[in-house]
Image 1 (tube, rainbow, N blue to C red):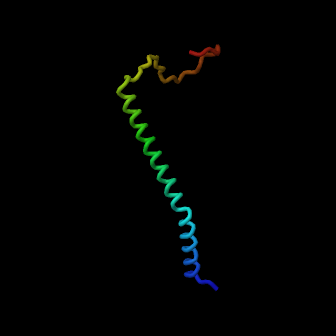
Image 2 (tube, helix red, strand yellow):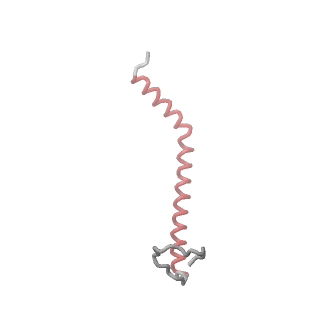
Image 3 (cartoon, rainbow, N blue to C red):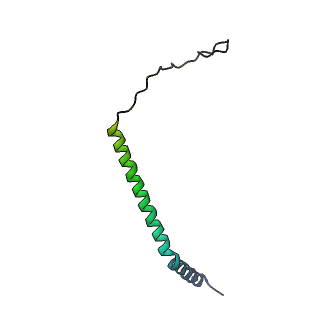
Length: 79
């Protein structure tokens, strides 16, 4: 019967065989993903910098509504 050490060695060999086949492909895909993520982060940063220097922020005029604690009118209209 197999002991714990033999099972551990067999498991390590199986993992090594699987990684030998799939390892390079996984590493290549991880590298591509990292490059894409870095490029997108750089593009977002450049867009933020460009947006901040091109146009000033828009100010929209409006009225402020005070904190109301009163009840709405009885006739159903909005204040």
